[in-house]
Length: 66
Image 1 (cartoon, rainbow, N blue to C red):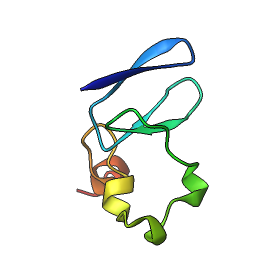
Image 2: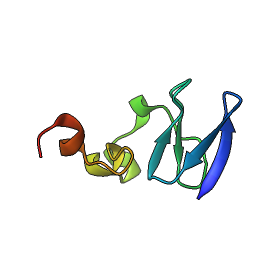
Image 3: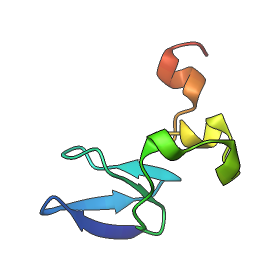
């Protein structure tokens, strides 16, 4: 698992998308900073399920629809 520093704190990156709780920046599993979410979409090849997978939970689980 990759660990990076963001906002002077360590941030583990075990998931497809990892978000800094201090500034909201998103990083991938390799610790690379991602483009702002407003730029995410079909042109990146990511499905909504991949984008919304936070801490191993699906979009439906996060929305309470499972």
